[in-house]
Image (tube, rainbow, N blue to C red):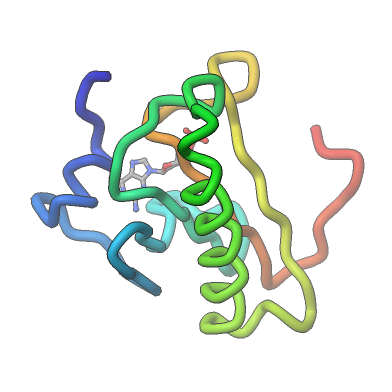
Length: 114
Ligand code: DGP
């Protein structure tokens, strides 16, 4: 896959407002927040879209969800609640082709989404 801005962030080549990191996963604040707390959870190892995830990526996909919950606790939105979103491809609203989870909180989320 081609390199993306998130690949550069994962390699430390571009700065980001980091909330959590471990050997496999990085969580940082979104540059254009859509909620008082808007985090992005990415794997260090790039996967372009959810369609590209393979059975051997199952553990890493689970790690993304666990990191989302950890980052929600770290930023104080775990108890009030938050939304996770994973956009896939153009009609799904994906703009950066390095798999990522959005974590949105700090305000009331509406359902259904637009
Ligand atoms: P998506 O549309 O699901 O691909 O979301 C991409 C998100 O990435 C979007 O909410 C804006 C955010 N974003 C784009 N470029 C940067 C960047 O350089 N730094 C950070 N922190 N966020 C970025």
